[in-house]
Image (tube, rainbow, N blue to C red):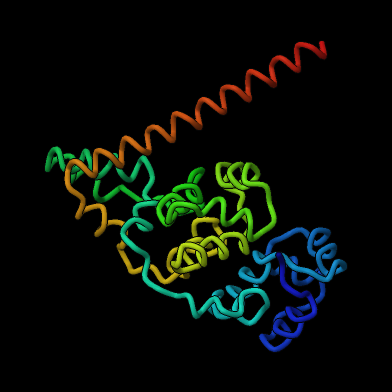
Length: 244
């Protein structure tokens, strides 16, 4: 689901932004052809709204909430749970914490150079879904958005749930929509109202057992991704060979 182009143009005018496809595309750094096509269809992707809000020095969440179907976005704001925070901790982040705990010298060497990897990451949506799933989220989401459960699972694995689908998933789980939108790459974690150093504080509070389980989970996920990539490469090679 997208937002009304007419409503966006009214907001852009009020915000002092250009509403023509060419000048707006230049300002946002997007393709003029793509933006023009969206205007002609009368619907704009949410990423355009968020980029425009940033250019206007406005809060993207507040701006999104002025458009249907995101009018209740601000009503669902709540702090991320520890499970949600850990869902956005990558393999590298977890390994850095594990190694740092093993030796003070390692910790001193890694601390100045470690930079937290922000979403979207290859598994950021799936990890978030798993973190908030009350047990039947995938099935319920498929029902609400009118998609086959298998297609929902594929979209989650491929990190391709759309913004309104992420919002619907958050509604089912009873959690903040903002973290889902951040996991999908639409918002930054700061825009999603995450506390500063949320990941550092949460991972530091893990027991050794829990930290090792987190590293193991991320390693398993990385291995699955590597296998998929290898399978795709092999399939492409076979197609190329068959074509001569």
